[in-house]
Length: 75
Image (cartoon, helix red, strand yellow):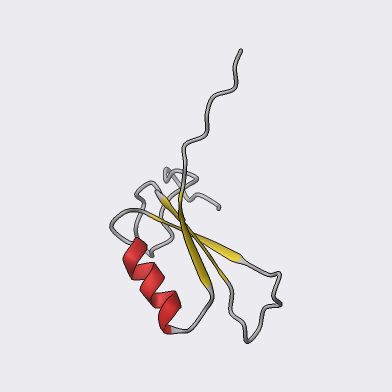
């Protein structure tokens, strides 16, 4: 995901939202994407339902998963 300006690199994909993402939405458009092609959107807690509904309404296969914070590597 590409950040814009001061937005974190893992910001929500909802237009105008710059909150940090807590959810990952992996989806594809079966009319134009091969079975192995996936796109990823990120969502904050406030917008995960909105973005999920947007994709499901279009019958796009969708997987929603929580983003887990990465563990720091031992020194």
